[in-house]
Amino acid sequence: MTDTFQLDGATVPFEEGQTVLQAALAAGQYIPHLCYHPEFKPHGSCKLCTIKVNGRTAASCTMPAGAGLNVESDTEELNVLRSTLVQMLFAEGNHFCPSCEKSGNCMLQALGYDLEVHTAGFRHMYPDRPVDASHPDILLDFNRCILCELCVRASSEVDGKNVFALSGRGITKHLIVNAESGLLKDTDIALTDKAMQVCPVGVILKKGVGFSVPIGERRYDKSPISAQALQDAPRGPEASGNCDACEDAP
Amino acid sequence: MTEKKKLRIATTSLAGCFGCHMSFLDIDERLFPLLELVEFDRSPLTDIKHCGPCDIGLVEGGICNAENVHVLREFRKNCKILIAIGACAINGGLPAQRNHLDLRSCLTEVYLTEPGLAHGHIPNDPELPLPLDKVHPLHEVVKIDYFIPGCPPSGDAIWKFLTDLIAGKTPELGFGLIEYD
Image (cartoon, rainbow over all chains, first blue to last red):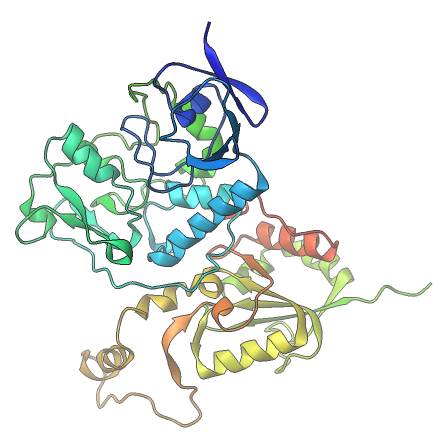
């Protein structure tokens, strides 16, 4: 007999070792999420997947599923909190969608659409973050970084290269490149690396292919992210699901 | 039978490209039913120069100079409902891409050091509004009631938003109409 928990009144079965988010998605129940990736160990940093368990908030991507838990997710209170998190991410970086080649395929943007975020609301910070165009094949646009660490995790866990890291604390935290010069051209990153495929926003871009898919035919032009996230299952306890959001390796 | 009083709408473009106004015209023949319900105050469509008392104000573009601030405050003072329309009004958009540059060095490069301008000088005619140090979204200057994102928002998005509002409903865009690009 499989154990179950309650999510917004629905019964969700889970396997030992699954988190609330993994079990929910595997059962076809969507919980908004951004820094979570089915192929990686949950990170728990963006807090978009925040739920209420027995009245207390928790990140569903790291919260172990437990028998009899009473989980709330799709409530006005939590969706307003999620919208505010998206607004803060937009105000903190330079997310100028009309000039971004990730537009239409960007998870942050798609979450904004789903959560009906019409404005960042806060005072925009307009940080000064020069791009790194040093590499012949790859562009790094730090203006859009949301510090999810997916590239850091992919480079170290899958590629075995440690090309990326986060440096600094609080508002000064930023993505850095592991080279004495600090430039991507002096690393051993390759176009075939997993780190090239996992960026949910438009930081790590392959040069020479921008805007290749016309407006109307891009990933999130077709259906909302909430519908597409469920197609990425299975999500077992080993976090070995296949992710459709990853770009294809060249 | 008394005719129902029409709602009065004012529109303007501040630090924008008039793309949102072009998109507004993309509602095409729906302009006719719209004109059954509304009449235009200050707008590029009427060429009225100042905004009078209105029900709805639609403002495109961000705030990049002193005149923009003046016009926006006039709109806020006169419009019961003020709507920021398009990326520039909502987050500064393209003009705000200068925000991480120093204004003086920006002007110097454009008017003095770049090749192509013979005897160039930084414009200083007293009739020209002074540029602000940074470009600001509208909500940093006055209270904004609604936002229609997009660069530009589609004619369909503008139509849906306005007809919801005119019908007295909370305007909703929903999938396919909410776009940031």
